[in-house]
Length: 96
Image (cartoon, rainbow, N blue to C red; front, side):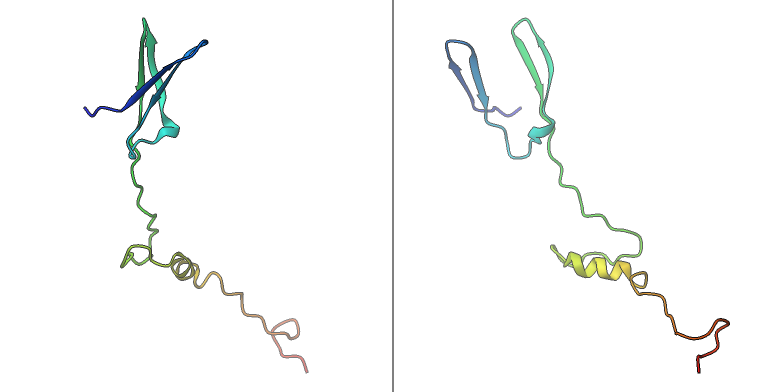
């Protein structure tokens, strides 16, 4: 178990306790697990690097930081192309 540097300040109204957390702690998800008889227990979840999504049909990233726009463009083809339309008369015959 690693030790976290703790600073305690005594003010007129309260004790202020500061704890320096390691960089791999996801502080936004920290929560009080237990607080009774002078004991405060915290849960400090570790942050996990989540891999970038790899949707079916995409090519695997060949290097870190592959161009996201390029990959999105590859994923949208051919859905991003507008449908073909040729002006003409009803029934498919050309106007004229």
